[in-house]
Length: 327
Image (cartoon, rainbow, N blue to C red; front, side, top):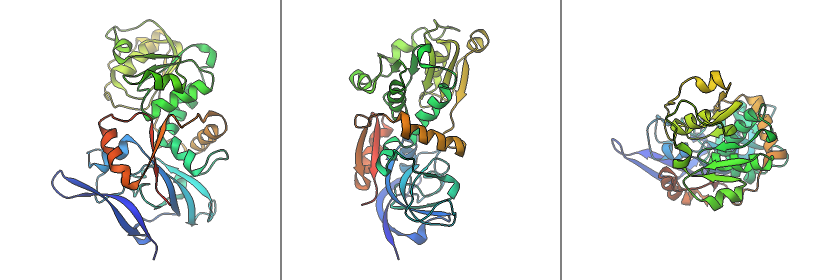
């Protein structure tokens, strides 16, 4: 019987949760079409919420979080995948209410599984992970209408995982990027930002119904006043993408940017992004959009994961945390 390690969160009291590395076996895994031996995962804010038992992500415990995984197919009921194939599994219900990637094995439906694109490896795909994929989905939608010579693109929450990749990818594609962050200017300039704007400066005067048009488009990762400000400051016919709500899930806004400037607001749902477009975006990342990740990523193993979980929940991490799961 194959035994393996998994990071497990258990409920031990009314609002008390305990985390540990436990030994599991294949029979513990949920039903699924494809059994994958996991090599790498990554740490996202949603993983931290699940791992610490915060409400809104995971309903039932004990649970193994991890909304990202890359690995090698061990067995498959779907002929599209065969033993030895390198694959990526992200989003859908992985790590939320289904056994996730902080485990040496996962078993999932075949329509969650993406073949590893040429140009990516088990490690580099998880350096990108859901954060980089979400950034790329935003860029995929934005760049269909906004070209590199149209003007600056503003990225909010720029020092976070999604924001860091958005800055780096857009810069690599030839866009001029204005990064909004309360953190390291040097870090963001190194990623390719042409300008870094502090949070207070960005939000200045945002109570007005319209702001001076400054940006050809925006990638918003935090929501609330930041999203509203980005929309109000977007040039006519510009595009704003929205993928997060860490600042707020409310949008304090009127219709003027939409009816007076023709601004488009595009929501990005990385969890349920259509499969065919998901594969296309992964291939775009692998072939053209992948930035240098050494300045974005740090690596830990399962044993070092809890320390990073506690840090990310407090906003204490810039960039990405790669999780080495397999040997």
